[in-house]
Length: 221
Ligand code: Z5A
Image (cartoon, rainbow, N blue to C red):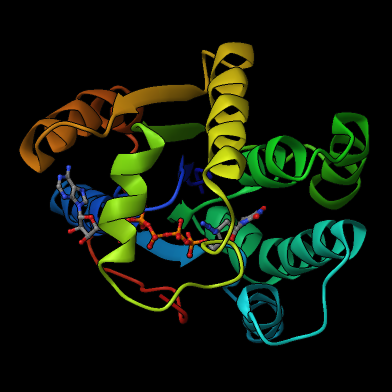
């Protein structure tokens, strides 16, 4: 069986990851590709519990090291129970955030050592890396104003603008370091134009790798 493709969506707050994930899923299914949609942190029962702890504003202060380790603990569960089995079955995995988010938020935002993140990445993922990453990029104020229309802020959304500027810079650096894998999509254009740009990129990946029609929704998205 041909292994599925692993596609991740990245970007700062409110850039449109969730909106476009649904669009990409529909697009791929129309091309007879079976898709598992999932997210990080999260995607399994334990990883979703870690997500709640990570986003909760009322818990005790979480140290930067604990935050980093919780992200990778959730990821280890997610890879073992969702991502790897799906890819092995020939399904495509469409994931809302993955390790580029760790480089951006814990590396750029929290200033954790990049070498520590890379060490954990190798430990937890082995050779697993996304086949394609769509990085939705927009000026921080645009993403924040879109996201904040939703109301209450989580622990990350409560950060200062400078934190999100650092996150954005770190994401753009990842894109510079891995131009083959990470494709930059301007997210401050109309949704229609964003989706046109996404299709142009996705098309280059799906080629002839279509698997039988059917849709398998990740249990947590
Ligand atoms: N985190 C971390 O620190 N380290 C890690 O390793 C990982 C994660 C994996 C949870 O992520 C937090 O975890 C995240 C980083 C951290 N915190 N932050 N911030 P999340 O993905 O659940 O949270 P999020 O980034 O805040 O997602 P979001 O706010 O839901 O944003 P989004 O999914 O990118 O946006 P959206 O919901 O699709 O769109 C927002 C609104 O904009 C919505 O009303 C849309 O209709 C609208 N929209 C979207 N596109 C457009 C365009 N083009 N024009 C106009 N309006 C638009």
